[in-house]
Image: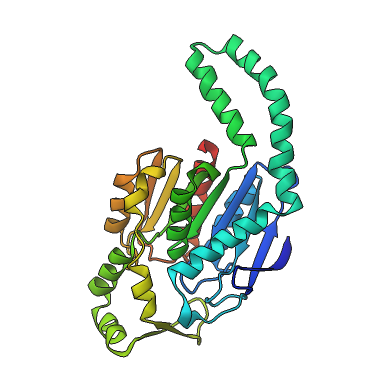
Length: 301
């Protein structure tokens, strides 16, 4: 494991943890949610599933959260979280381990792909099966990675996949925000008084569950920024495999909202509902369940 500090486009520090597999099956970026951080149990559980399957993993704290990166939580927005994801991926592409994982492997695969295809075509009938096998082989060498995120991080990884579908092998938005509009609807449905105070005073003040004793103070500018974002208009770009997981008792990204996204997805898709689980998974049983779901899904990606 390597702990690093990199710079984003605003010259702010971003704390990154890189866990490099000696013989990597691929690469996964894993992103926390609003006010979260890379050491949270559910983030570590997700990373553990990837690592168990031989993936190199990149975890990071966005700016304006409760982690080790720069910024102040009260200034958090979807825009700043998404830009930090873009900047982490851009940074990764400049690293020697990324070159080794994808570029050198691609060069080797390009030399060997012809020989492999001759064998496939001679043994696979009909030819469509050989074509599918070639597609699978090329995906290994094309530099595509998997994205995984929780809550607001789930929105960001799905949004990135919509904007750059050619780069993403698969995406797993967990307890994901679908749009700013639906997020506001959930607040009004489950926390109407808190939302009224947020509108009235300009601030939402809550105590952090992940860091007891820490007060989270979020500006109403977060809502204004969030209303600019929606996964549904470009959902047709999500043709790669998608895994959605949501807690049965989630009041931040309720199951009925996640099902709207699921039903709109055009490609291979799975939706898992975790019984009795809230928005953020902390219970050992729930953590084990989501890990097992990931292990099974990765076998199919």
